[in-house]
Length: 180
Image (cartoon, rainbow, N blue to C red; front, side, top):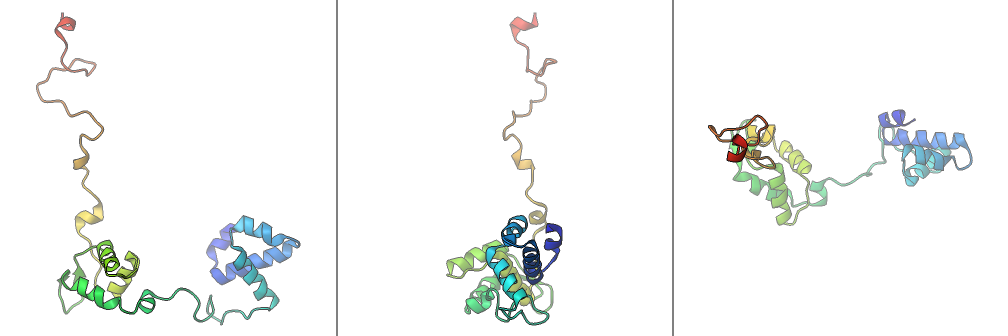
């Protein structure tokens, strides 16, 4: 049942769970909720849609018109101007063509917007920059991750110096008492 549920959109998942609950009879909704992990509110909404107590969403839509969270630009109308100010000094590439990008990371821009009183995730900042025709680029070192040569010596003994005598058990130079 869960394999099918993963492939359905929100509306179809709700209707399928409600159908299974009705098929199981008394307290079937509890069993279906436990098995699928669907919320009680969603189950109730699906049952209401099946029985006709609630009008279904318009054709081609998962939710009713106006359903869902408002876009950040709509919820916080003044966010575009501060983002432009932040990006203005960080722009690189061709300013008129398609090859312009921002030097600052998305998380740095997110933090700078938060300092100015705006809430936006790094994904929202990325979407807003793409809408303004910025390319999302990263430094090659940032893409491949940190260099691992700096962790040398952390949690491990230092490498032996050249020319230091070592016995076959790797304990270092033999003591005078042991050498004899």
